[in-house]
Length: 429
Image 1 (cartoon, rainbow, N blue to C red):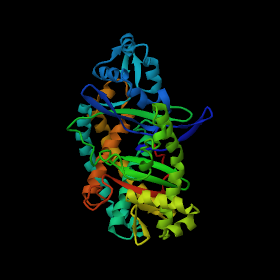
Image 2 (cartoon, rainbow, N blue to C red):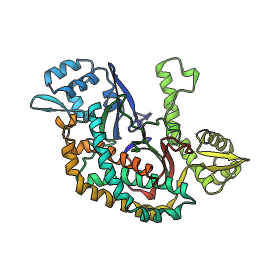
Image 3 (cartoon, helix red, strand yellow):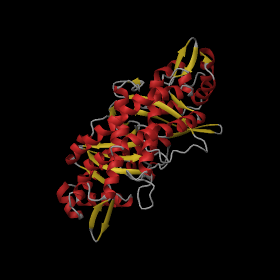
Image 4 (tube, helix red, strand yellow):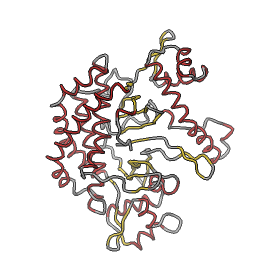
């Protein structure tokens, strides 16, 4: 599951904003560009693998290693004295030394790798989607009492089947069953698996619904779930995560500008908590700003400011002072139905893996990182994303669940959701 979450930490007496999980950064090497990130939570600073992979010396070394492993001495020479050492790259989870040579040890996917993976995954996805659609009646019967109409049903299934089931519980299931390795690098406050994917004109991620961005606000979580073609998403928590410095007086230096951004990031959790309270109040039929303020205890001027922002990203609409939410809201009452849907999806995943995992492992044994020092179980984090991403695309195309690119859908490429934490115990990283 491709995830972004907010984590704020106190370090050395100062407020420090930890990195955003799986934040996409475009790394460029000559004419080649890459998306880089992590599945999981990362440390900050120099040990953040995204920082490392953006280093102008490390990036060319990774590409050289992808072509052919290098002797340790040559790899150290390429890094030079001002960059990272091979030992540091090992600790960060990017390389290993095998028989005196440095090899890739993380989820690196060249353009050719992705073409192979995409072609194979589309075939795998047809079978997995078919297993889920066999249970369409049972799934829809569980979900329908929670919604008012077919549009609501399609949204709910996109989230419960595609995100909670195939993504979050899918990552749990594949790890529990031994198909997939967990985080490759762990510490007291972080656990992650880094990845790097090459961009190419013929590689599209449109419709690969495989990524969630999340913020936990008390007993509820704000989530956007969709593809990575449509980034940035006009939803929550995303709207509060793309911060720029709003203080002209702090534009005097890079350090001051960064300070302005950190100030916004530090206060973003409070704004997201209040936004959650406002959305819940509207969902519970508090339709005017004074009613929302009275129900939430949030000052009227803050409610007004929050409502204006939520209207600007289409999360709320207002007609004659009457507010309504456009996003899916799932409360504790949905727990039983969600558990039933998750169980059906898990059975389908189990049956698919029993039949296809060994074949998939053989089909994909030629992936660059797998031919070096990355076990297939580690690479399966990315492989599974392609499989369930294409499965979600097929389920959307079949009409079983929402098509986020339908002409009348206001959030292209994703679905925004506010949901009660009791609906999913899976870790969202």
